[in-house]
Image (cartoon, rainbow, N blue to C red):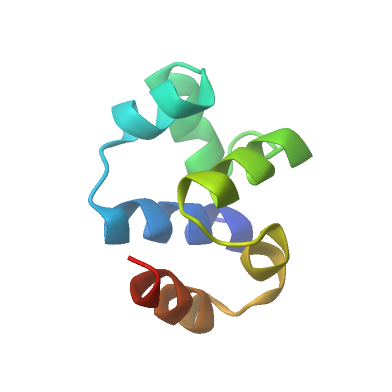
Length: 78
């Protein structure tokens, strides 16, 4: 699994959202979102922006922070 896909999965888990909810927020099917989260399809810039907005983190943080630092940031902003 690619590092960004791992990050978006962990963010979803921290927030307690099911894949169906995140998929709905992104305007895609649950199956399409699952493929993004597992790294089977590419994450576009638009999707990354939507994900960062959903979880109230900056796109820069999503892309540049380590998984551990991103989790700490996400938890502190809940």
